[in-house]
Amino acid sequence: MSDLIADAIDMTFTTPNGDVVRALKNVSFTLKEGELLSVLGPSGCGKTTLLNLIAGFLRPTGGLLTLGDQEIDGPGVERGMVFQQGALFEWLTVSENVDFGLRMKNANKKETARKVEEWLEIVGLQGFGDTPTYQLSGGMQQRVALARCLINDPDLILMDEPLGALDALTREKMQSLVLKIWKETGKTIMIITHSVEEALLLGERLFVMAPRPGRLHKEYSLPFAELGLEQDPRDIKNNSEFAQTREEILSMIWNMEEEIMGTASS
Image 1: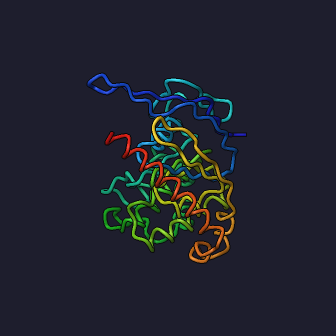
Image 2 (image 1 turned 60 degrees about the vertical axis):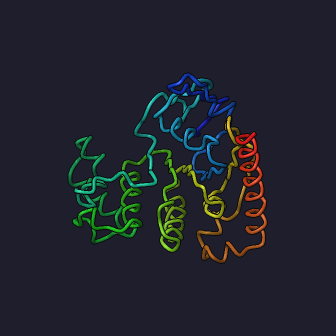
Image 3 (image 1 turned 90 degrees about the vertical axis):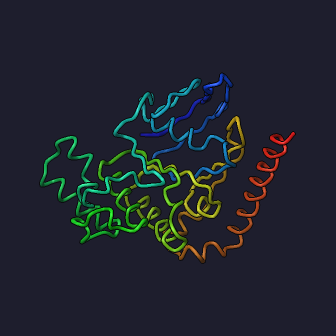
């Protein structure tokens, strides 16, 4: 089982002028294989720091992160990352972007070509393989980024505000695509977002983080990701339970932001 376990994670930074900033404090949770987790919180609560620790871009100053039975001590092929901006090579074609990781591993060319076609179809980009990436819209580029991540078959997919730069309609379509990929592949997914609605729609589990030092403030188990596989996202957002939970979390984060502003101005 490739469960992700965070055990009492602390993260402290020292600024260039010598100030010590405690970004995360005693963060503990288990993300089971195949679960879809969304993470919310006020600005500066350590959401992205936590994601970067799990990705292996940073090392925690306290505690232990493991995936399966292996400690996370750097980047690894078992973890895939999708960024807010796709981090694509815009001068390459769509197919060349998608198969980049496999080419770096000198994978079988015939098998790689088959996998590229398969993933382009899954993300709705069949027929675009030879298109230069710079010619694609933002939403299409994020589809390429998803395919590039998934073709490498990671156990855990990490998403840092992957839909934040998209217009509302494209974002809604991409949310449905994320749910489809989660259900069809059985992958474990952790997504960071600033949108309460998006976190509710995509999170089978949802963490609300408290402001610095970042801590897990509240956890929700939600039905909306499963509902989103069958229902229109707009219908789900009109669901009374969805609306009630949205208002509860918005108030929670609003109060945290007010507290941060009050502390900063005092």
